[in-house]
Image (cartoon, rainbow, N blue to C red; front, side, top):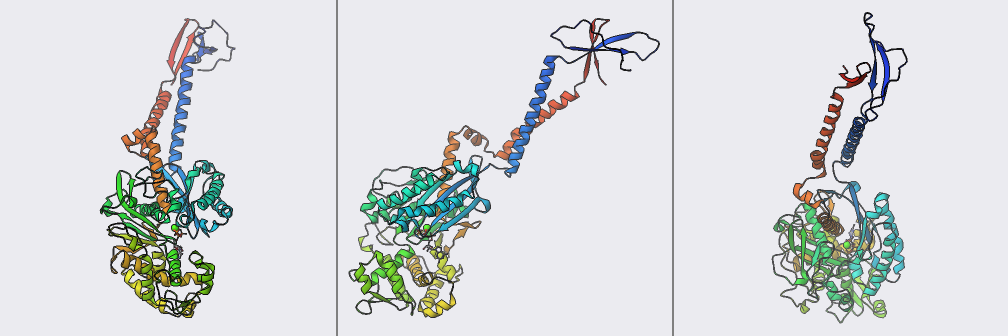
Amino acid sequence: MRRSHTRARVKTKPDKSDMDPVKFQIRSSNRSSSSSSIYTLTKSNSKHAKSNLFLTVASIATVLGFLFVCYSIASSGGRGSLRYSVVIDGGSTGTRIHVFGYRIESGKPVFEFRGANYASLKLHPGLSAYAEDPEGASAALRELVEFAKGRVPRGMWVETEVRLMATAGMRLLEVSVQEKILGVARRVLGSSGFLFRDEWASVISGFIGVSRETRRSDDGVRPASCVNETNLTQNVDAAAAAGSDEGVYAWVVANFALGSLGGDPIKTTGIVELGGASAQVTFVSSEPMPSEFSRTVSFGNVSYSLYSHSFLHFGQNAAHEKLWGSLVSRDRNSAVEPIREGKHADPCAPKGYNLDTITQKHLSGFLAEESKLASSFQAVGNYSECRSAALSILQEGNDKCSYQHCSIGSTFTPKLQGRFLATENFFYTSKFFGLGEKSWLSNMISAGERFCGEDWSKLRVKDPSLEEEDLLRYCFSSAYIVSLLHDTLGVPLDDERVGFANQAGDDIPLDWALGAFILQTEASTSQHASSSHLHWFYALFGIDSQTLLYFIGVPILMTVLVCLISKWRKPQLKTIYDLEKGRYIVSRIR
Ligand SMILES: Nc1nc2c(ncn2[C@@H]2O[C@H](COP(=O)(O)OP(=O)(O)OP(=O)(O)O)[C@@H](O)[C@H]2O)c(=O)[nH]1
Ligand SMILES: [Ca+2]
């Protein structure tokens, strides 16, 4: 059939509402028939055209939307998008910032403490060093904030929470001085660009057992009782009964790392932590205990009834300073007999070490200026005397015990139950002496006897890279560790249930700040999920975004494809208007 070359002639227009005709003349190819008809090739019905257009646009939009969902899930490794959180640990020897990345899957946070999902930086000295000059803390805090900003995408800063949680070093300061330093921190963090509220900068031992009021703190740890902070200035010992949140957080990260968090309480692992200013003991105990030591931690649908306590002044550095103080002050039952008037033997310092500089620096907390100058020390390096001096320090206050039984100071501690990880200085000192896991506590004794009994000059040659003060501490540390775990807490010397560690599971650092982040994120996510419209969905389907993709995405794609195929497959009809016959003829295009 040839296309006509004659000009199309305009005839009666069909009904306006129908279509807008295009006309041309087609001559039949058969010579014999002279008939030729004028045909009208009509465009499709405008309504029909619109629905086609809509269908096409909708199909394209659906397919694009589906492809975008595929891309965003694929690009996030088939999981929720990455979120961030920042925790600053205000310790006594330094301030450490932790930057965490995590995802939400099926309404639950998924934590990975490695690679781009975890970074930390520690700056010395700790916040408590700025007691005389609180403003001086702002420079270090700004440097830590800049470190975090380098690890959180700028677009996420505004929804990334930052918390400052200070521990023993700050606990030892007057509350008024604490508040000045915290005020500087609140100003720096408030202008950091991260999500921050003033109450998120605090000394974490905010709860001590005086009133019977209980309340749920926003980090998922429910204190057995609490009181307002003003009591802290009146009774430092009461403050010593505080701060067990630090121990709880360390317990949380240890059991998260070991995979026992969320499981049977009996199968969890306890934590004994030897810090600089404080020591923490936290474990699941079935023994009845006074409420000020009891903490309940909920994780998933499991509740853990814990004993948790932070022994302020019983951290390694604080205890060592107490030893020097006890060597000098005659009005206390001195840990060791003085050599002669004003000359004190220090059994925890290897022979030949010159103690005067270090003791003058550290005794400010214990001595009036004149008695400091009058006193001098002689290193006599004797491990067993050092160990009994350490025991005297640990038992100081035992006579004031107001509980059924006390172990450290005048504080109640139930009998240790189950397995334990001994962290921080337990780990550092065991590593220094090269102890293996097997019988490490009994080997600590022989290592300490050798080290304390050695001449200082030989020790210096063996470890020239270490700071003198750090090297010196290993004699006291080896004695204090055995005296704390075995002589005071009753851990048998060959007990395999207690091991030293600084990481666990998949090399997860056993740092309490990670535990605080886990609890806080778990609490805020489940709060958000229960208040968001998706809660019923996750509860009903309990599926993650990947499965969601298959359940919803694939059917949409199939529907769109069927529509598109059916549309294209639909016979292409041609509607023509026969002028001579005066009617439409619909015919199929091959
Ligand atoms: N030997 C040794 N000791 C370390 C090392 N790192 C930290 N410590 C000591 O381990 C203890 C606890 O470390 P951190 O928790 O980082 O110190 P901190 O938070 O400032 O101290 P606290 O406020 O008591 O927790 C302190 O006594 C530190 O001096 C290390 O690499 N080697
Ligand atoms: Ca610490």
